[in-house]
Image (cartoon, rainbow, N blue to C red; front, side):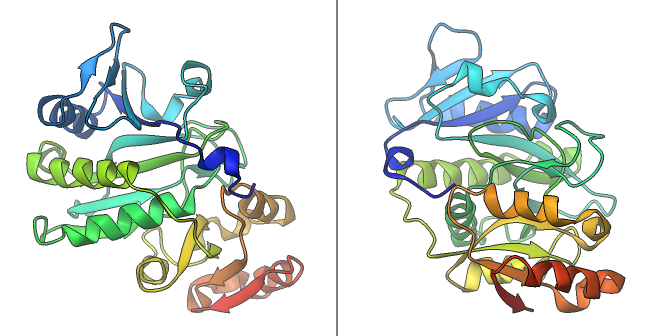
Length: 279
């Protein structure tokens, strides 16, 4: 699914918020109050003259189950979900990821289905976020491995999240940084990534892959963490390769983070014909 001339045409980014999600509500409120978004007259739908390539959609549904957005916004370029992030550690974090289920669909989406990834969108967002890190110096800034729904949208869904407790979900400072960053990305002309990788191994918060994204020319599509490697077979690997707006050229492995699956994953990787990079 290479980035085509048609896909590069000006189409709106849809910022999707849910009333069920405190961080989502805080971010939506910031955008409405500070970025001149106004109602179109359709329930939950907002536009701004200052950001002509951006729409806001506020729904009463959970972000994890919004599989009908294609029907509501057939001309969308991508769906950017404004979301809260939860973690057992309660760590302050600004995270992002593409959705996907390598196995069960406990939290939306379909069984064994990953979403379409948009590597340059994630790369531009992370790089823009990092430029504002002094404002949120107490937050970690990382990508996550692919997880949860929605998975069947025909335009790429991308989650940008604030974690990990109600304190952070209500933090206007963090919300402003996240919102300002994604607006800046949506308003700019993104150059497609020259190299795009899918990544296997490591933790749910893959520090090696985050560093690769920030310090190299690589964009990153789907990421399967160590705990999902037993679910990776030819079919899932093919989804990871094919479901990307920009062509996947490389398979990156967290070498120590492959665990007992190392030999099997290496055999699968060899059959893809992709460049193999070990970290």
